[in-house]
Image (cartoon, rainbow, N blue to C red):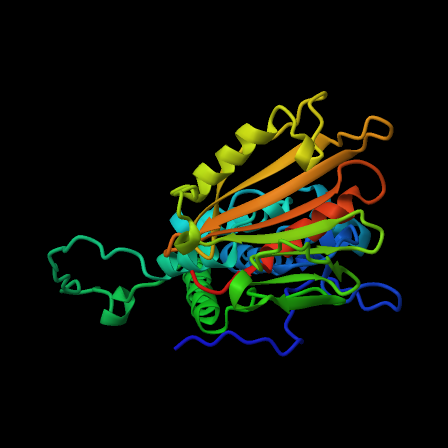
Length: 354
């Protein structure tokens, strides 16, 4: 029986920690790059820390520890650790994926859970025939105890890493700690049965007013300055009399892109310069989804602005199509903040009926 716990007192020998007034608290070698840069943390930041723990459990050393705190933080931002030598297969894949500097490219909790479960439960080896080895006989023969099996340091490290993977996988199944964790100052909005979703946005965001012909299947939120807008939308299959809802999330993403790629005045997308972007496959809760990040210029000829539009599509089992999109500045002071808001909104987006 393996138990994984943390009393806040365990350390790898030689590791440093940050507890200074005015700084962020924690062991710097376990803190995700986006947190070092002062950006909003999210589930991907916690998964990064898990990757560092698994690397240390597998290799016996921390991948980013240096002689002092500034050097450690610099290595978190820029250093690429050596591939884990003692991990193979899904365990190596999850460690490498979790230590990606870009939080967007890290595997989500569902993928991590699946890989760790595979690492903890490898396929059974083919049956082998047992062969008895008798102890040497005769004068000068070694005593039977000399024939016991001894495991080297690397073998014990690998066994320990697999045990950690099994414990973490079990914890993820039971607790699912990365689902729906909002940053401080955010609020999750349950949008009711008609919309069929909930979405998290910064608390200061304001819900948009509904037009007279509003059908109740979408909601809009925007920050007071209007720089960032969040929209959730649902197309209901039962109401689709003309069969316009595509059969897959990917088909919907491509249909929208075909409409937008040459500019679309009703969406405020200018034709020149032409929008840039292309749909790609994605996952939502372990199911197939699609996404696109479109870089465009507004159609306002007097004051054109560079914008970015990120959208995720998910088609539920009943045929309903769900979409969440975030529109934000592509350049300037608010660009990085807008991208982080988009990432966090999508990470905490909840569809009621999968």
